[in-house]
View (cartoon, rainbow, N blue to C red):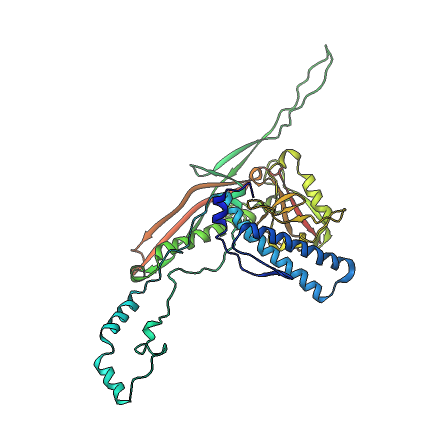
Length: 430
């Protein structure tokens, strides 16, 4: 843990992944990053033991269920550690999500104060006197004590999870001031030759240049809320809607960064793979493909092959990019010396690794199925370019649809492969 500041660890420890049984006798500690890391390592050791029994012919329904249960728990734990790592890397600790909002209920306070000072109104008292003595104090009756036990409501809003790929943290992001950006590519096809002292010197070939344009598309949202709701809501509705649109924009643009067709949106990195729609778009050709080596599965040798196929000068900063389902598949792989290729995080700020290479979770990547590109390996910063024309622009519109207020929100962003050479794609065999 010596690589991470005490402040980062203190704030990281506030993250609370779901508490769950990982395996036999191992329970997740969701309060301490050090404990989380040691526990995922212990869980992985238990996973290896159970999976080895399965591979050695001792498989049965109980053992299969145990392997899958531990594997799923390891995935959840690694995701929680990856979230901590992302926050450490981005230096974005501190947001509380409304944690310091006090649940004050003015309506309840006013009613209780009135009841405390004056009791029931006279008519209510008379009505109860006709029916006999007053009832005992209960929660079910407000005048008989229910006001003392109100049902409070949280002034924050719990939102359904939308998983977002961390493409922006891995690709090269460039702001532009015009309608697009054009890059010029040199094929370095200059020709040279050896000659004698008096031999003729015929003309030699010259390099050829190619160009590629990166033009931003536009994404928008236009939610409405009534003026009265904006005025009376206990929640800051404008701020909440803005946050929801921001999350949705991030989700949509990251989907496009991975698989977008370029129609009013970015060109996805997967569309530049050999055999895909934009395989011929780049002057230097397509992103190369390595076959997984097993029908509808991944063979261990293909992991080594894809790493070795990337030129050494590009492997500095290279990582694997895959979704969680694919990580679950490769977690069972071993090398020729019977060592597991996947290894969990060993320190906060460090990702899980595959054959020694870092893994980044991209939820929008395809899973392990015949014909799919289930993983990418390479240097994403050198491979993919994101262009931002402007940031998020919000136009508050109280006029178009009275009595509603509209929040017209837009963003211009584009993307595409700027260099296919530092990246390789792992294609699952049919």
